Image (cartoon, rainbow, N blue to C red; front, top):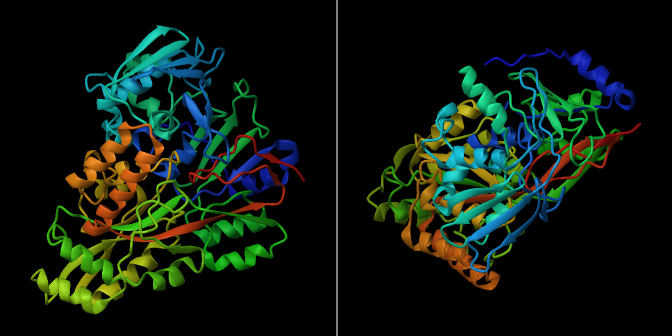
Length: 530
């Protein structure tokens, strides 16, 4: 990958932090390397932090620190009475980033919107298969079938014609996969024979432009001087890639970074009394789970899935892994989201019933399987390896021998998407505040082979979530989603493990940083003051 990298030593990062008032350089100790810089190709929050949340904008966007949707690259929009036609009035005068190899000759317009969506929708599009051509979010949300056509009325007006009403459509357009890229840059790269560069050296309209990247080390950004909402208070943004949470905290204490994600639960007590640190916290819009590959035996048998649910001691996991910073989950959506069904009863920890169900399924002697454990910390799982070890010990008590498997984060996501696992630890932080973002994306039939890591397609569940999408009546949508949660629990494609409290340690000199309810790390609007 050609990146035009500039190496940053720890000493240079530290000096940039020390000179924060003059240099206005903010350093973020991130937990991992991005898979690339085109958010439509991925689902990882690590990648979104490095791409969509700094480099790009979307037609609509969430107000920082909230789930409220407001104008983005579209300054306004109207919806037809039948809910099938969305007309967006685009903001004028929005500039793309000038990069080392690309100098835009025009401002943002309707062509960029059409390019960004049609690349994902149209299999015949010249960019569709570039960089693997896997649009996991777009496909899981059935956007290809939903968007019938996109019309350019003029440079500043674009119309989306839908094949059916879709209640969460506007909220979906605020999500990372819907980021708008430069069609002009795409055309230039295609003519030069290097189209893949757009996914690693992009020109966006966002508050920061990508200046350099060294894998597993640093990402450098510069403030976009003509950003349409005004130049960022900071001049430079540096991601110092630091996978170990203890090392991240040590860097924070030394002043080598200003903000860090995903602290070790064991460090929270020290952070609360650290004079240099402001420990922010908020209940997370998330769920951590263990997904069974329901297309593999014996997990195609609901009795086996139910038995292994009963064999997991969730309270022991909350104590050992979350250390008080989480609570047991019973539904696939968090209790902070509307339509959460509190009447659902979770599987009790009951080894005798688990053994009885395994016997009924013809597995009285148990079986051998695996548990995949992610190599990085996530807001919904601070220590997947430890969690896997607790589950491994629990399952051994009912005769199930599980090997723990892990891979590098990008490889882990790729292989689990392909269904190589027997069971996999993953989780989700909501993207738009709508239940559809959990239930359809993670458990719908269109997500099989992608974001639906359980590879689970169950028609009674599918019918409910599809009905819910088609009605704008919130009360009716709530009823349908509540019923879908009951079906989910009975079928048990996951062990729902926990909802976490999100902690964000930031240095005291950082001003106006806000916790993102969707789990992102957003640095536009953040300042540094001594």
